Image 1 (cartoon, rainbow, N blue to C red):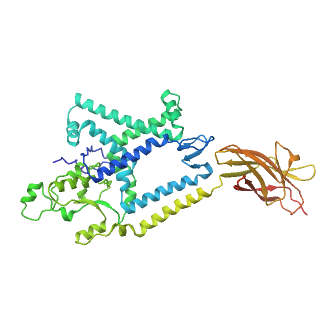
Image 2 (tube, rainbow, N blue to C red; image 1 turned 90 degrees about the horizontal axis):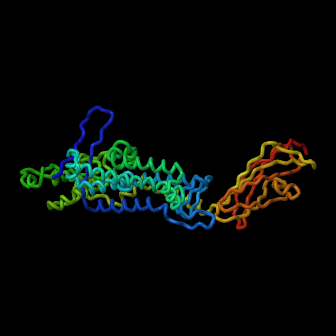
Image 3 (cartoon, one colour; image 1 turned 90 degrees about the vertical axis):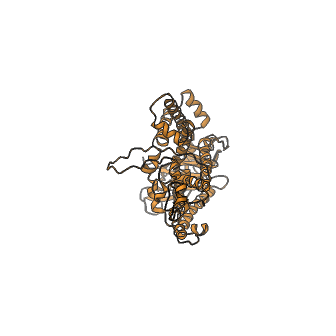
Length: 485
């Protein structure tokens, strides 16, 4: 028998103090699933910055890198430039819609298994249990006066949490610079100040949120449960206590067997409360503190097996399935449950955004061009009567190799030259070389006759073409004094 976590009584205060929760160890299907997801997500987070990806001699070889200094984002074979930030926006929108999709289909599965707060809290709880013992031992230690044993165990626990928190903050900074180089600089004390500051902030927040405020973050601080409650419907999965099967409860197996009247399967052992990471009683119905991690299902199934009664007194269930079971009818099939309009709509939006981004990535020319007119002076009349305008042209070479681009004009009859060659080399096009993964800038001039249509500006298009046929365009305008044919 486990002592229940105390349930707070309303006090009228605006701040709810922390109720310490010491979850009991449990084994079962969902506990093993949480282990697998925790190991996988932590491995991805800690190891990803150390993966290498060859991009040629002119680009970094870190597989995932947010290169703020050069304004690039690398993810394996994908390279995102600042002018392509819409890809990042697309990924964020996909992540949001994906959360909506998961919530609509399987309820708060994100909260229970993959949320960073859940993963690191779970890790901290296991460390705490390893040092201080299981639930009952932790309760005794928490109530005991301070002594050598308590001081030693608490020191060991907090030190372990601090190491994990520091590794968490340390891993984060490696996403923004070459990981081996930054690691050497960090250890030798030569890393940028912002790196030490970032590690300090993330260490503190991980330690506080994962260890000292772990229950309060999920119940009071996180806005996601409030948002999810608006997205869930009668077809969404949630952890449900089958009250029609468990009630009326009896206090212990012996009383259940001796009961003269009807007795439910629940023997009020409170094992479901003892294993809950937020300390709630799932038998009281749906609650914002339930992260649907399934640990109460494992604990209840163990107890039902021990006393020889059917399992799944607590289980993942939709509201529709609960109504059907209560009436003795067959449950809805999982496939039919998933195929409802809202889930299908979320999936189509999510898949549509993903396919559009893949199509755009596969068809981009890896060239960018922009043209900025020089405004001082706006135009110059040359000795032969022609009018000249100046422009600053920028060519983005978005590949990991040097390239040469032919620059030409569409939409107006003009000659162009750059400031190095002079007007004597004016032609219909010029060639600009750009280094690998760099932006080449060139000051160019356009000259055209003043004869023609009476207007002060002419719109034209600058076209950049590489040897393989890739091209990019940018529009601008040519200004001149108004003339009459």
